[in-house]
Image 1 (tube, rainbow over the protein chains, first blue to last red):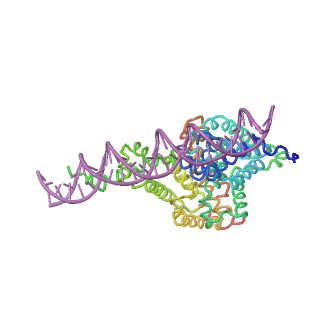
Image 2 (cartoon, helix red, strand yellow):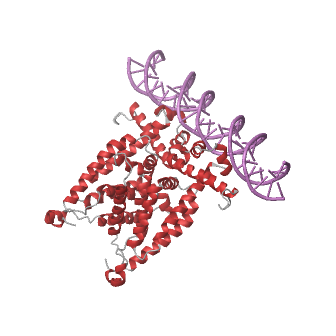
Length: 225
Length: 225
DNA sequence: CCCCATCCTGACCATATGGTCAAAAACAAA
DNA sequence: TTTGTTTTTGACCATATGGTCAGGATGGGG
């Protein structure tokens, strides 16, 4: 009976309830925006009485903050693939794949994030100024190194990053528009694959990316434009 | 005295009032979303009593619908540059320039549009299904012709369009994030120019675009990949 | 078995909001 | 000036919403 490691400790159940509420909240916030979302609707989606939400999250804003925070952390984690790569083809390719996958599997989170930023980031401004700024600076350094190594053309790293964010997140934030233009159907597996390939192809070609493998041989040979 | 052509006819004043309200509404909707916007705040921004808004626009939703509609029409008009071009370098280049300029001058409109689409287009779904679908199909045909003429690589036109929308609108929808990452300052003239150049360079290079001028000479010579 | 902390919830409250309305003001036409 | 129409607006209403609270249920530890 007790071979199962403490199935329902107090902390566990609390964590489960919080998670349930957070998931419902993410759905509702993503579908209606912060202003349009109601605690009642979130409660209905979670299958809990409204007062129960307020037991775990004292205010609507605190709940919203948690949702946005969680999304941001997931986003950061997925961005790690950037580092474990020797060159832009591998690094950016993996990054695009990872972000496209997120856009496909969790479009709600992306929408909440987009909405938050569009509204002047009222609750996560500090994240933008600290964590995101640091992360961005780090990635810019990586890209600049790739440029120096002749692995890609000299493009403004900042705008390249914006382009990566824009294109990948577009498939989440505007999925409704994309579906409508697709005859009302969600993208098929093949179509998602095509989307990934298109994005990777255009961007990697657009920056003149060279596989890191060939770098060892050529070294700085193709440094000049 | 009457050399001025009927300065204040009834219709004129009505149009002016409507315009004033629509502009205020665009600001507020863009800053707070449909759900977060209040008629009272729109009225304050417009400098009119709230009841007056309801004289011109019976409901909040009708006002919102007008705002979105106007934005969409502006967007369509700007997209015409696409047609008056012989090849991708000129056509897509001009299109990117035009959309970047809109993102810079009227980020509010772009945000309202993004918000509307993110929320499943509750009020302009019909536009997506009719006008936007037709416009998209037309542009896809143009791009396919360019590909046939060997003016660019064979890329999926649909995903290319999404990429154009995503990258250009990103500078409007996420302008707050971009400003934060820019040290809290808006992009300077030079930075906007750099953004435009980066986007154009990467995309045009990414699709292997060739100036139409060289097409007359080479014709289909470089058709194969 | 009892106790106490944690958890749950129906009922309730204060406020904000979209929208209405009747009366006044403005104004063009006669 | 008079008249009829359009426009303006303060006061008002019904409702929805975020949040509170007191009392009850639950369940682990003694």
